[in-house]
Length: 357
Image 1 (cartoon, helix red, strand yellow):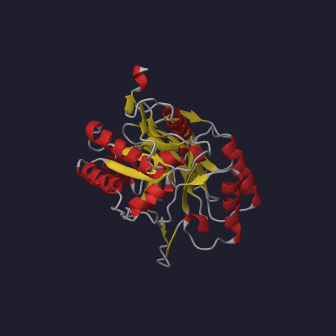
Image 2 (cartoon, one colour):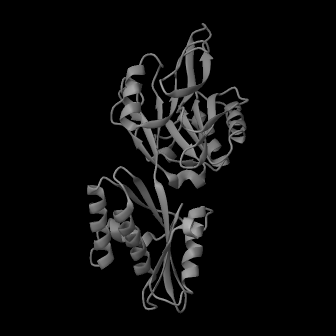
Image 3 (cartoon, rainbow, N blue to C red):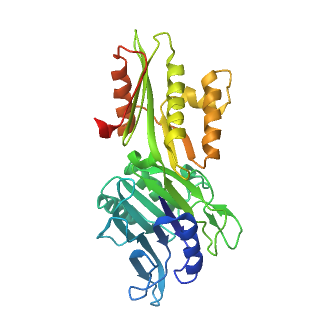
């Protein structure tokens, strides 16, 4: 599943390029800004439903505006908003039920915008994705030092406990100065952050903003546990549970690495090409060993070897850190399963499908 986020400077101007991007990326949801259409204007794409918020300049011409286009076969419902902001939102079932909001903030902000933004978020059921052109610079998202008016957006993000999906890649090329910056933001509820990867296109496709692609991976959570007399690990996903107790002499470091390796072995057997997976581990030491190619540990070498094989099969794989005990449900479940496995009386793996329970 891919969400396209893009300020593409006019629905009609870049319509053909939009269609090409949607086809290439198999986008399910399009969050567009500066659509520059009136309420009476068509803003449609074959196979998609359209929801838009239009804006007019003092001369009556269409300016700014935001839209969400979503595939008709994707379950969704429009969320009516009470706001003066150029924003539109839907409740949509993708890999799970989410609220997606597309927003365009014209340049220049005031305290009144902060109040409006706060009111907007209160109308968006979590977990949410808030995607758009905020016209704001901030060091937190890879832009230059903010101007005083940009602090409104920083205060809004901090005050509403939102996560930033941006990775620091530039999203905007100033036509006059030729300078790059980041003014397009992808914000989300903290619980949804680990579900998504964030990528900027290398081509503007006729706009002065670069398209942004937000994709979800199937997330598999792993965790190891050690007591005074036992060592175990677990992995969990939607319909999957792995629990293994190891030899009592095993280290927690080895348990965490073996956990990742077991998941990769399972994916090698079951996954199809073009599938996307994210293995979420709370073991920073494991990630550091993998990142440093510390092949002195046998399972580091085996993991790297297995990742190469999966890549050749066309499987998109990410291994990422997930902090413990911060309310991420999958991580909490993996922690409980690993602790449960400490009491197993046999030293071998137990694999169960949740559907078989």
